[in-house]
Length: 455
Ligand code: 5AD
Ligand code: SF4
Image (cartoon, rainbow, N blue to C red; front, side):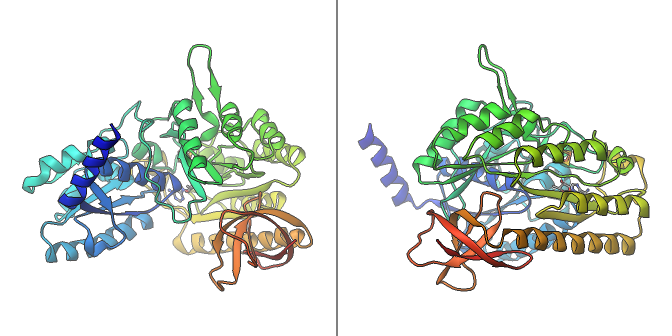
């Protein structure tokens, strides 16, 4: 059997496989999807290349979350058009959320694009390539209620081999008023926990030290099987039990669903990291209602207090949108006071961008003037920088267990890693290797980074 497999390998080498180049935009989920696509095309005889000029097939896995994410992709693909004019056999495919949102229109608008494939149709790519080999443009943007790519072993595209992502569910049923995701990624569905554990064990066997479990709303993970109901807390516990040397993280939680049980599991399991990303979006109950977030300011604060009481050293981060429909100055101030109250370590902050066909686009006017949106966003960013700095200053003098995951950008003599709370810390490397756990005492900080030395 092995000999037979070897023979196939040799044949493929002699035939010279075709080369695939993938570029990924947007969230970690998209990066994880690109690894699935790479695996499907590997099976179809393609090998990956980092050199776009060498490619026979270029895929761009796209994001639609804000208008500027789409504009970036539109600009970038014009360069592929140029490459195609020099190499007419080159094929270009648009994958992901933009493909799903714009469907065949994308083929009309960008006439040099060969393939448009939505997030649930990646298994169909080999057929689409085959049928389109006569030059026809092809599209499949059918969404699925079941597809989780559970049986596909992703080809790892990360550079360091230390930190890997495992997708545990797909889609979203929350329909927050501003958000395009439920339309581009379809209904929420959980992946069979057995396949999740197999993939996580495989990563550990390959030497990975950190796994992030991914989903749009991980708290609502659920799997029902006779005698085996698994919720997110149970899943995390099982993944963490694979090895005490493995760090487990997750993204993203929805404040309305984060349970006391989950907070306790994080608190009581040493290798589940003490770091929670809990997107608040806005600080006033009135805005949260217009956003259809299904929690109030008080409910959010209650969750934060619960986290702080059970996990006193928990890293906290969030997402915030500035200038959402109808936002008053008072509502904006409520976002600032909530930020001060929580004291986030880190935040992703955005200007509201209206997305076609969402509830917000249909029901509310995008009426906060661009200038005001910009000013409010800047105030939010300034406050967050202050908050990150304060949080980092509190870490000076403390010693952290750090997973080393990078050589410092500034100097080869320094390494960087992450604390349990997900903060980056830089230190003199001595004989430290990538993937090591080391103890580092924090001696100073900037707003973005901790600095320290090995102890
Ligand atoms: N405009 C601005 N930000 C948005 N997000 C989602 N939709 C929009 C939008 N239309 C932000 C939210 C979400 C993060 C992934 O992106 O903060 O949590
Ligand atoms: Fe979008 Fe809300 Fe779903 Fe997050 S939870 S993906 S913000 S709809």
